Length: 313
Image (spheres, rainbow, N blue to C red):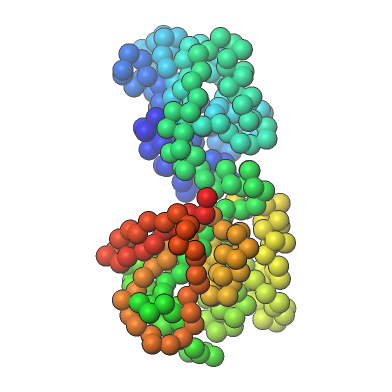
């Protein structure tokens, strides 16, 4: 199953809005096939794993075990249902990491396989498989995008100087900026508040990483003349999240400013947060947002800078 998870991560850039899925076929402790979901609309992991089996090994499928990180689909979408393909292929044993919460699956794939006589085991490395697709699962179960918060703060707890214009305080290093842009590439939408738009004129694109630019959003009452090309404006967080969900945008990165970040925290409308701890002291300025210490968190070193990584379970 760990190999399934490893393979699934290869689809991180292009699988969305579908989940990342990996599959491995084993015969007597030997891997005879493996695959992952490469791109939305293309073959699923199970199909790619079965198709990867060499002609010489195909007779072994009827005595093999298929491991897959997410329950095989049971419905006709852009591709046929994988559960029925597995039945037709004659694979006798299937090990599933976690149930697919998508309304058209939700255990139906497992039922199809069991009704056909396949021995199905569910829940192997379940937490790791759920973590792999936390954005997809949140989107399906909570009816809103997965929300990640990100900010850098000074050693004395400020995110910026008090200012009406000019350059912001430089708290991130060139290398930690790469992490910021990696996060942007991993999310389908990005948001800043009205004040940040006014004083920083942010581009909100991906310049220091590889991937597609997220949808750019401003939170607040923005006049039509203020809104830069390519940006969207919303006045209310809940309306915004409902709209993003209706459009199939699974994840939102919130970069600021402080009041905007705190509003997501106070409303409990967040799932993950990255806080970069700069060594710079500002002495005074805009206070950083506050997350309760009771929230699950770990300190990690990224590019030689301490970060606190929070999860809002």
